[in-house]
Amino acid sequence: MFNKPSYKSTSIRLLGVLSLYLLWAPFSRAEVVAADTHGFVSEHELVLAAIPLQAYVALTRDIHLWWDASHSFGGHAAGFSLTAEAGGCLCEALPRGGSVEHMRVVNAQTGVSLTLHGGLGPLQTMAVSGSMIFVLEPHPDGSLLRYRYAVGGYAPGGLAPLAEPVDRVQLGQLQRLQRFIATGEALNTTD
Figure 1 (tube, rainbow, N blue to C red):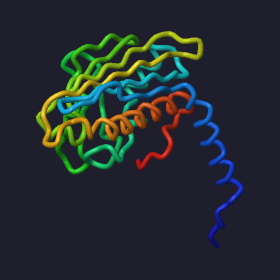
Figure 2: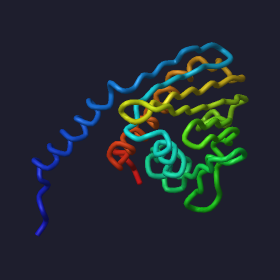
Figure 3: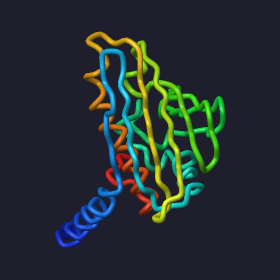
Figure 4: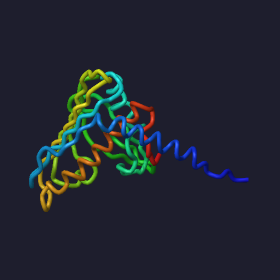
């Protein structure tokens, strides 16, 4: 009839996920380095288990495979694309038609760095602008990813209260990229 769930296999899977977290958590650092009424700066460093060129490909070409669908307009990460060239778009094709430009590429240096401008999520509807940069450097374990997102402008009540929530979301996305590179899966995907 119906197969009963295997608690042993579920426990093994949970243990595997926990092991990955414990393995990679020490290789990440995140911090809101500045926050006030007019803006904030979030910085992260993560070690990625791939050389810089491979990490760059995962960051750009494979974004739809690791992006968290819960941070999309259409509810599906499969609609994400990132054209890694000046003027390129971090865009989302919506499942029922239409599209969203999340950010615009202003500097793309294959295997080295990527800079985008724009606001993600609720920041799109505010009078703010953001500059996001990813820098990849060789590291004994693959690559060191240095990430910085600086957001400035106006929002009622100021931007400082948004710093921590935006930082948490961005760290989560970067950790999904980190897991994707290490395992081929981003985990906890809703796609």
